[in-house]
Image 1: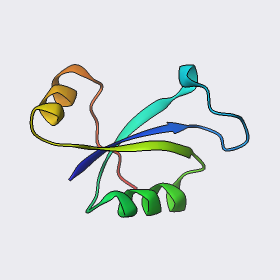
Image 2: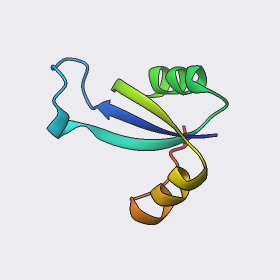
Image 3: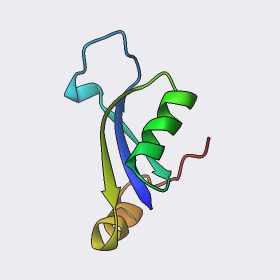
Image 4: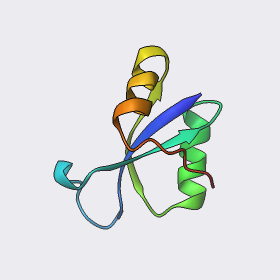
Length: 70
């Protein structure tokens, strides 16, 4: 399944919406995404959203869609 991960680049600062970034990850479930992010990045994960169907198709067409591999 494909997930969109919203994150802040640093855990040191308070999250600000204007500084929220996102990336796309393929994983079995949300827990696997949390593990991948925790083990491979210094990011502060804000939210993980599962993408499927029309939502996934929209993201592939309209966003800078690129799967991140760790």
